[in-house]
Amino acid sequence: MTSFNLRHVKLRPGEEHREALDVELPPFEFGGQRYLPVPEEVEALLVINRATTGTVFRLTFTVRLHGPCYRCLEDAVLVLPISVTEYQATAPDDEELTTPYVADEQLEVSAWARDAVALALPEKILCRPDCAGLCPECGKNLNDEPHEHEEDRADPRWDALEALKDKLR
Image (cartoon, rainbow, N blue to C red; front, side, top):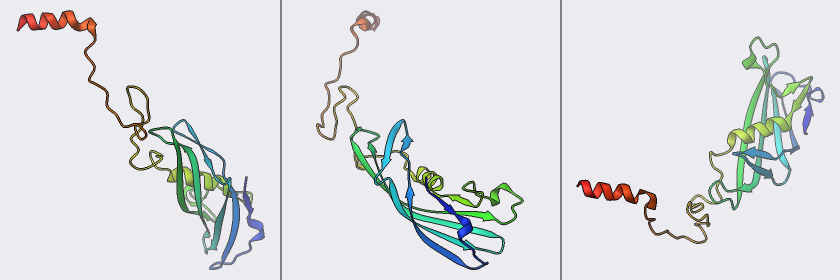
């Protein structure tokens, strides 16, 4: 996993450090399906700004995920531009002023990137916006074979009740 050693960056308040990193992204489990980042390492820009009260971290990259479509299970490709910011106070007195991605002067870039991608995922990953999905009757892909089924007759076990209903009318 990709991490960045913050000891190598000595910044005074108001200064900025920019660095291009290759960030390793793990596969994602989403909605019971597996989505793979292609490539597994994405090029990202890490920007570190030093403020008088702490440090601001920004990470920007674009990820391309491959996996099954939510509706038809065909291959789907999702391209997500990611831009996230985290803040770490120098002397935090509140949990909100810390980032979980900094520990022992190491910035865990892969964990941060993974969480940022997970938060950016849409509710449903589709192969195309107008995906018709699978037929609920026969399971065929409605994108390839659009069709309708004849209306099914009621279950024959209900015929006696239907006859009683007609008799009472």
